[in-house]
Image (cartoon, rainbow, N blue to C red; front, side, top):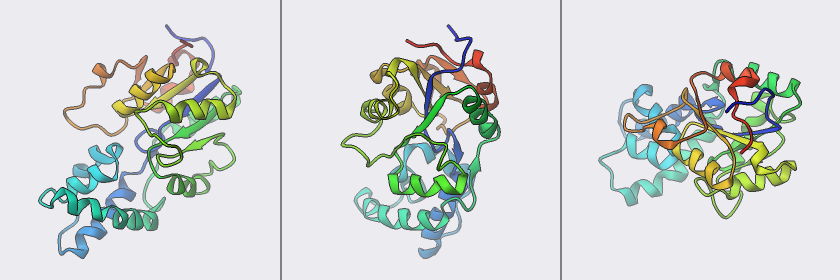
Length: 225
């Protein structure tokens, strides 16, 4: 069932949903590989892991390294990534038009990401979203992160919208699980980052959307629960 109007509020995942940040992540990984005498990692090989987080990307880049040792490398990855932040990536095609359509309709929008909050906040002025994004919650903002529903529930509370009137958009199964647990309708962003074994149909989101430009039209959005 779809709505004839835009949603009252929309919360978005960041990496792989609003932002094609894989090139920034790849630059960070390549800096780590270069420091260890290894060649760059092909972007296409890293891209599917971006929405899985820093640990998944470091594991993909250094599969031969013990997991405990890789864990000690996470701060190094984040340091490199902070230096590359916003230098190579950009919003996916159609994102700006979609956000403009939401804003024109009076829809409030915000971001709930598992990226550390300090990194997500540094991106906002780079993207021109600092004044437009009504709420920003990172993976370390609260005591829990997605797929726990807490970040989505707190985000809805902060913008003053009931969760059933707030839609969550994400490209990873954790996003859809969090939305369902929070009582929010969900949109599966099929343009994002996925592993070959991922099955977005099995996630059972309310709707699946191929391209951001589709969400510039109200009929594409699910209605309230």
